[in-house]
Image 1: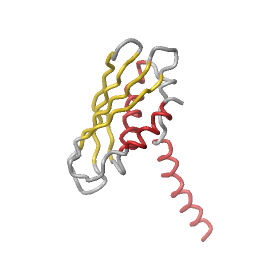
Image 2 (image 1 turned 120 degrees about the horizontal axis):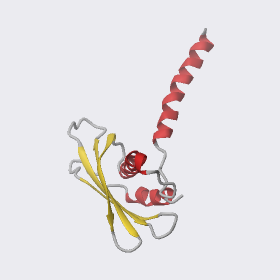
Image 3 (image 1 turned 120 degrees about the vertical axis):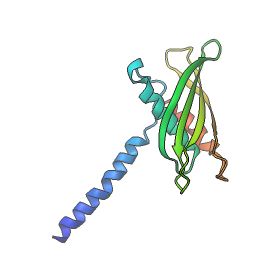
Image 4 (image 1 turned 90 degrees about the vertical axis):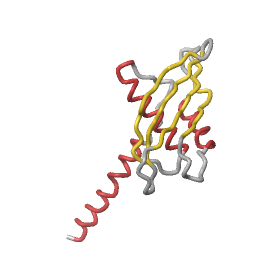
Length: 140
């Protein structure tokens, strides 16, 4: 009986960890989706950037996105995400993300990511080192 309880407890603890690992998947710009699933893919890009920039954002959602021409062989992906803080603040915050992409070749390459948000309450700044590390994951 005790072994069954322990097994059930271990199973329950393992399930959230696998679900969290699936959410942390970083999308690749080399394996872009077709137009039908682009919105979902952009949402995953924005979520990855917000999670890299902030210590513990909650309820991250895609607000809007737009592709902009940035010169020959370049495009900018402008993304607006809304999220809530992990503490008792109830109002949503807005993050503005611009992903600079080289589209000149067959495989696209992320050149940089600009991040800003309207969170003036927190004293912590966005983690630029984690955002830079994310660029490498986008290009895998």
